[in-house]
Length: 88
Image (cartoon, rainbow, N blue to C red; front, side):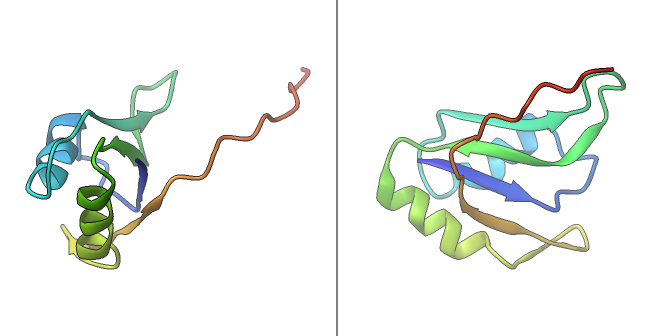
């Protein structure tokens, strides 16, 4: 299951995100999304957990919890929708 994690502190990196979820089970990947120009975190990321029940446990346990003074939003990720190309 792909999990969306929002309202992360900008200092959180992929390793920290993986550690946060690994206590609930196997984590296939954990990626904090970064600005492509500055490399600065955008404050959200995605975690992939292959086991459905472990992923659901992680969502229930971490959603609306405080991490480093910020209230996390954790839920099942929605499929990405295609956006029209921007023309400059």
